[in-house]
Amino acid sequence: MEHHHEHKVRGKNLVLTILLNVIITVAEAIGGFITGSMALLSDASHNLSDVISLIVTYAANRLSLRKATEKETFGFKRSEIIAAFINSSTLIVLAILILVEAIKRIAIPEPVSANWVIYLAILSIVINGLSVLLIVKDAHGNMNIKSAFLHLFSDMLTSIGVLISGLAMKYFQWFWIDSLISVAIAVYLIFMSWNILVNSLKILMQFTPDNLEFDKITDDIQQIEGIRNIHHIHIWKLDEHQIMLEAHIDLNNDVKITEFETILNNISTCLKKYDIYHYTIQPEFSVDDNKQKIYR
Image (tube, rainbow, N blue to C red):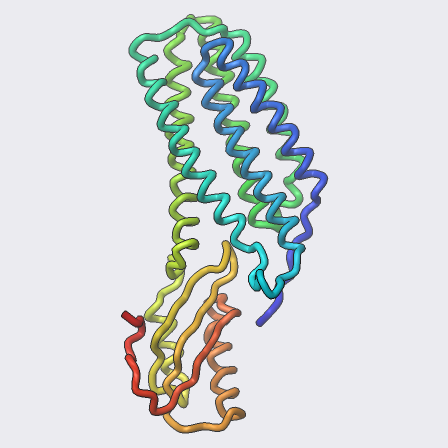
């Protein structure tokens, strides 16, 4: 099993980014309730998703430093996946509630205090912009941070939309645009959260990763000299990155352990092409069992 270099994340930058986003989330939520602006409440929900995402990223980074134990042989590698599933499903429910309320208000627009919307949108743009700058370097070497970076950058763009909404209400009295922006944000939240929900669920259910061709992998292994059949195969992801494989290998001959190690090295070389570095192979010879690829 190969070990890959992992970029060390600067914890202080993450903590500061979390605090900044908590401030803007609370400010927009309070402002939304005071002014009656659905756009502000929608943007607050979006910022809340980023706060949760950043906390999960930080917690996962801290937990990843803990070594595996006899009770926790995989450590806490799936904590991030579980949190992502809970976070995304909660956001979808929240987005649907916002969508329903916003559609009602499009039919009957309600006056909104445009100044509050404008000021808080500007504050959100500044804070999200600062947050982006704080983690931009870490985003280059860490996929989780890159995901948080993209969320924060999209937040900044969303806040620009809220600012445009506030200006339209202030100078043109287009109060319906507040609900329209809310609908757009809610749809965007559902779209972004749905992918996270589905992907995290697939990992938790131990599905074969979408980017891998199950039959191609098994056919490649079966072409290795000395192997008659491969069966009882399982391919799944332990977390967002690590792919696991286990299988039974039916051998042509009753070989010695040293001979099997040569076959095992060939299997290892084959699996590396698919970024599979953690595998468990059970060798068999003249074992009378089900030889199907997938045991049913």
